Length: 437
Image (tube, rainbow, N blue to C red; front, side):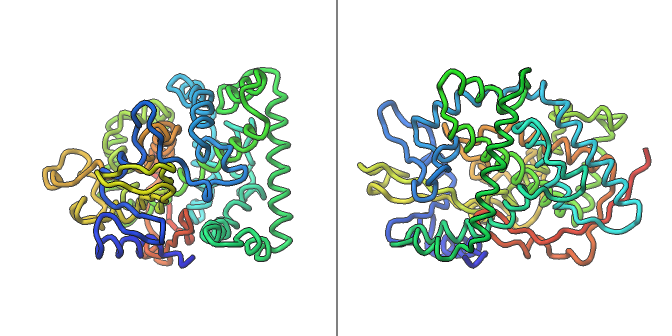
């Protein structure tokens, strides 16, 4: 609830070591092998450390991210087609449309010479992309240059969700949460759910198939393999997961490039060496940009999109983790920000140095396996490759079209971020100078 949990967890691990008990039945793990120890593939017949049911409850437990082992396997098999390499090629026109619209709108906004608040622009672009790929139509954020009420509500209530998640561990938590929740918020949430139902209903009524994330889910529903509740929960979850974290990474990367001009210049040089025009920059071609990938990878280390832990829970019979027996029903977590900033695992952890991912011998001692922003094992992020391609596409077009300079009012932006499960980001003002065609 303080917003600085990531820094407190860092201090605890620095003081007490790789494994810290942070509540009577909750452990925080801060060593690289913990990813695989907790989340990796299990032997046949061996129970997994499942998703914590207190954290993922209600409709969240119906999603690919929050479901139990059986449901996860079923949903992942159904959804995997929409995230395949072939699907990405088929989806390319959708990504190109919104990336190009973002650049066009930003050129107009930057023409006045005033700094632009870039986080909203990235959110508008990624939510429009996700809306098109799931609901079958965008939210209209870029076109209208404003947040859609459905999208705005997500950002308004992230802090409230974090507080509720903390309280859920205590007796009578549901009663306390209901008493704390204003009637207006409950009304907003109801409207949010009804909008989701209406948009999914419209998408399911399409006569012609679309190469989007929902097509296989709709077909599976027709075969009786998924319930309508599962369809709705996953539509909502995929939109948030496929947009907010991508926009967050783009914002963090923009800040880091704006304050490290030499890296921005090197990135532009890589683009000039590979492309002759903006039209050549697409979701497939950006995958050959090695320095671009290193920049994004390093940005995810310095400023991970999910800085906190997504908790797991040991099975009733307990589990061995790192060679130690952990009793049943123990909550397990790996906080990303403290791990990625630990000097035991990364040399000069507070510095933004993409070369550490390109074989620079100065960083041979780095334990690179520690960086797992998309998690590991059978439940790793299904959209990992798509997220990388989407981030590279938008960032490539941004660097190709603009020179980015941090506005003085946003100095120290990174340190002003606070954590409520996800980052609560302050405004990020950047002056965009259009490059010559």
